[in-house]
Length: 467
Image (cartoon, rainbow, N blue to C red; front, side):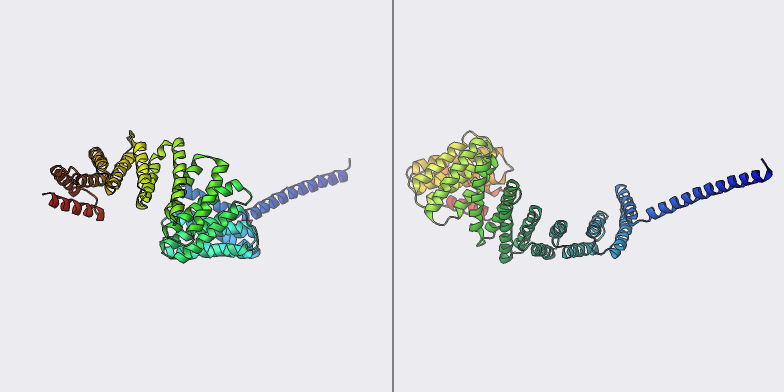
């Protein structure tokens, strides 16, 4: 091979080497540049910032975590500036603000500005995407969170604003069950805030909305779950309406009773029966016509008796209802009916050591003695009063720290002493002794109030009479 050929071959190898080296260097440069560009992509920077914030928060470095989230906020804001109607970016921005607020609260920092920003962001998200499920739910969640604020007036305003904003987006439409639940819960919270403020009109209006959304849930995508949620909402709404004596209460109560009867029919469980028994008793308490009230009380008693067979722990509830029914019939002049209900309660409470049951037995024995005395059944009245007094003394000793038991025992002593001095066959000396002993016990009562003072006045008057 000539020298010329060798030179050409050498130059060719050198050229190939240079090309390979250049290609390798170019690939490295491109890879490095690509990695640099990848690292500077907004989503990568955002993920890195949020990961750093999470790690700092886990290690208790809250200020550092808040700083990382501030950096993350800047990254998202840059992306939003380029795509202002990107719902994913707007949602992420809102989630980031909520996360930052929680860290600030953990760090003991004021987050008023963050709270205002969160509300602004959620409102803007809903305004931009009124038909979006996530936007509606986010607005509701934030409104409910604002409704828990310490400043009740401000909480009510913020909550109402969020609820009305979401309501405006569903006019003429059928929202998801999740949105319905949020709206029902939100209006119920607003009703509670209005109740605390003593605003009957606002409370009634909010409860009407609770009722509307509860009824819609029962006809939603999941009727079983909807029925359960409707019961929860309607039960709470009815309690508020009863407490405030609102005009809407009878309507809510009747709707609740119908719902509970349906639940009992469909489920047949103890919980449904218990709720139906409770609210039927409440309905009887509020019935205006004597005949309707008597019939509703009878229905409530039937339910309570059935419940007792399933759950012995409900005995005290049945005793309370029997006492209420007996008082009702006694005031209506139906002596024998009232007496029968008192006697049933006394029989049901016999032999049970539960303090609540025994306390009710003491109370009911006294009520029966009083009823018998008013109808000139003095022998029976004295027997029942004596039994109540003996039980009261036993319970008073056994439960010295129970203020209600102590008071009921003292009342039983006053009643027993009064009946002992009554004709026929008055026992005035014994009555005086019991009255003095009871006064000593009454003076030692820890409870204050009108009932205790009235008891003492009655005992002192009786002692003066018997001297």
